[in-house]
Structure formats: structure tokens, C-alpha cells
Image 1 (tube, one colour):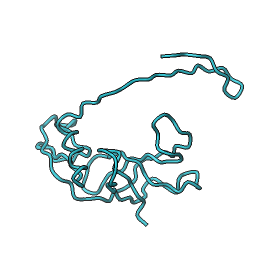
Image 2 (cartoon, helix red, strand yellow; image 1 turned 90 degrees about the horizontal axis):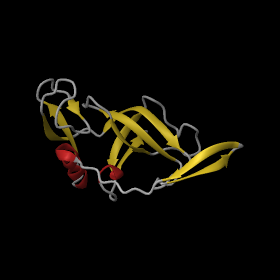
Image 3 (spheres, helix red, strand yellow; image 1 turned 60 degrees about the vertical axis):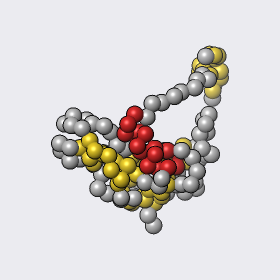
Image 4 (tube, rainbow, N blue to C red; image 1 turned 45 degrees about the horizontal axis):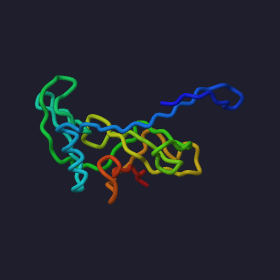
Length: 153
């Protein structure tokens, strides 16, 4: 790590540079989700106790702590719950501007995060909470990189 003082718009700030490699264990549910995306499917989990549908999948329900069963989730449309438009690039980011969103797909009880297509000429990206979106699986990338929400027009 390196730390150095920098001047930003007339104010002193500390700038850090971290060059770290991360390996994230996916676990049983995360691996099933990633492998599902690779075959063009979205894998969710259903709680054996309260029957909630969890997307992304988990191995147990955080409400009732029952085990879950994994299955292919069919719905691809849902409601936009939150989003942000990123206009300043950062290391490893997609080209700016880009959007990040959480949406609850129809039939799911939880929200799934993914990049969202935006209108770059509008401050809000042309999005609004409650917008209907569809989830697409792109041809390139791995796992979550391949997911994109698109507004339903």
C-alpha cells in the first residue's frame, strides 16, 4: 500500500493505492448460480420451511434458517428497486457511464444485483424506481459479469 497527500479541488486528501488479488469462494449456492449462468439459466433457491424464493441463491434461509433447494428460475422480468449511475471510472470498471441496479424478478422474494443499461444523456440514466426490467444473459464474461438488466419498453 502507498499513501500520499494530494490536492483535490483546493482540499487536502490522502490517496491510497492497493494492488491486491482476491479469490472469493463461491460456495455451493454461488457455484450453482455461476454454472447456471454459463448454461444460460438463472439458479435460485427455495426455502424448505417458509417457501421463500431466494435470488441469488443461498444454502439456508436467513429468516427461518431452514435449508434450501436449488432450482432453475424461469422469470426474467421484474421491478427495479434501486440503482446508481457511475460516471467516474475506477480500476477495473466498465466504460463510464454505466448503471448498477437491484431488481426483484417476478416470483422471487429477494433482489438480484447486476449492471443495467442506461441512457447516458440523462442524469438518472433514464431509469426510475419501479421501472420494469428484464434480465439478459450476455454471451461473454463469467457469472455475474454476464448479467444485464434492460428496461422493458
